[in-house]
Length: 354
Ligand code: ADP
Picture 1 (cartoon, rainbow, N blue to C red):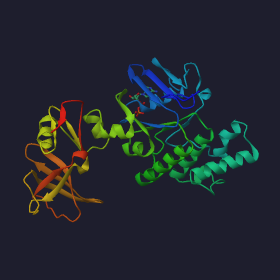
Picture 2 (tube, rainbow, N blue to C red):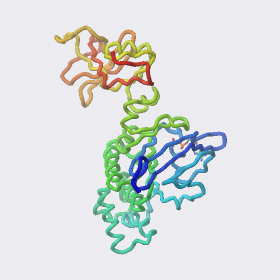
Picture 3 (cartoon, protein in one colour):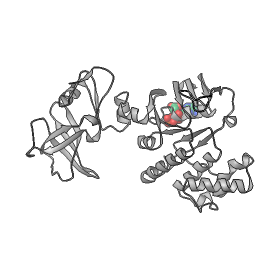
Picture 4 (cartoon, protein in one colour):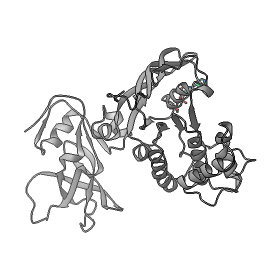
């Protein structure tokens, strides 16, 4: 049968329909619908307490649904116990078996499937290479760093060849630089194995680094769902923009004053600015044409030049950047060039190119 839209080789992946999960009076997951196609990685992103883990646990079969349904490859999972779903979970703390060495941990799901002897050894070696831990086979979990333990946990989760991998804040316990490196390695491991996975995280950088698709949650509800790029390019609202790392959101009157310097008309909409949306240059610049001006209120050095905060009359305090060779001090007047590609107009309609 030919694959049709939403299906790969007859597989349709995950289909969460209007799922609600309640704990007494608390509705942790509120009427959430989301789909995930085979071979793709979905990050569920939202602040702590928004219901991400509960949604993941519901998919795993660890929480009862108060409403809705969960299907996988067309099969309704109601009544299918966790261990029969063919899913694997990985947690923040890895939860390795302390009494087994690394090879024993990774090989455990293989043994459960009846894979033994040289077939098991070969598969363990392949998985060790996949997570870049060649030579670690006989180490005990207690002798590994946090990052190494998470690599082993990932290899063990992948060893089961789950049809869906559920990752609950797998990198949250690690420090930032390690997290960044490991996020890239997790992405590679998932891609190479064509895994279908859901990653729960409160860290947008981690979501961007690992996932193809993004589901934004807030207070139990799904706010936005799409590819990482689409959601990042066009956040649904101001809160989402801020959560995705936009530096500033301006309300309509200020937004209109700022966007007066762009070839776009904005009426009644907020705008979200990326860090690089405003490029500052000293007014003494010989190329200066009269435009948006402000007064430097703060200056700090950054990897890519200077990060400024600028006070603009009628708009307020906004972040700006300046090139590394530009000298500005607090109190200096600067001109600000607005970069269209780093300004997002929030909400639909009401805007047109000039
Ligand atoms: P997140 O993963 O986004 O941090 P959770 O899914 O853990 O959020 O929690 C969502 C909400 O449900 C929170 O208000 C939390 O206190 C509540 N909650 C989660 N698990 C339970 C539970 N077992 N019993 C009661 N309330 C719970």
